[in-house]
Image 1 (cartoon, rainbow, N blue to C red):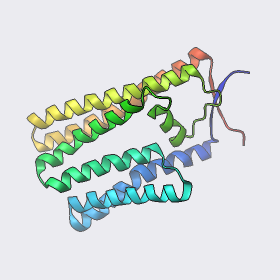
Image 2: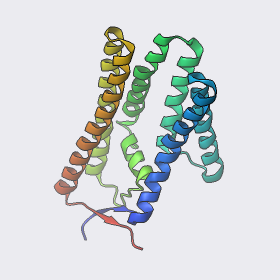
Image 3: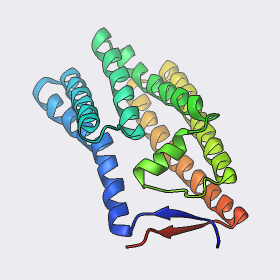
Image 4: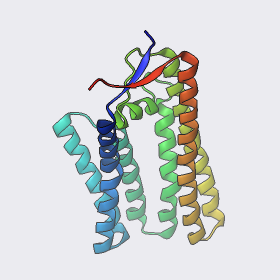
Length: 211
């Protein structure tokens, strides 16, 4: 029997992915806009940070575990909020963006050579991917993909730091958006292509869990 990877049924897969993205991104973004509407940018950052840490606490209390994506969101938001609120200057407001990318680079690089690379953890948590056979070749892929994302965030850090030094604020904010979206899209496409090539190379299949 061919070795396989397992995903939940489509409806459950959509719910699992949506919930993970909502609690890690949707809740803090909504809290930011609510706080900013009441008290400005700093209030928005505080509201987003409080919201994400309350979500972390709720996860810990009710499920006894905190997903990696939620942990990343909490750490990055805390770093950004601390930088912005502690200084109050435009320079440090802009500095939060390369610092956030640097933090993500360190998080991915730190786990890449370990038995639990971050990309594998995210795949297991965000889309509930299961690897019953614990295939060694697939593990090497997850390690390599984690290094890939560390490199993407390192390149983003360097690019944003250089842009901050030479570009006006409006141009820098536009570049931040382009670099962030472009990096995520490029990394996702590269990871997906690499993943399916690994599946083909080792004769692995992806199937849905039994109903």
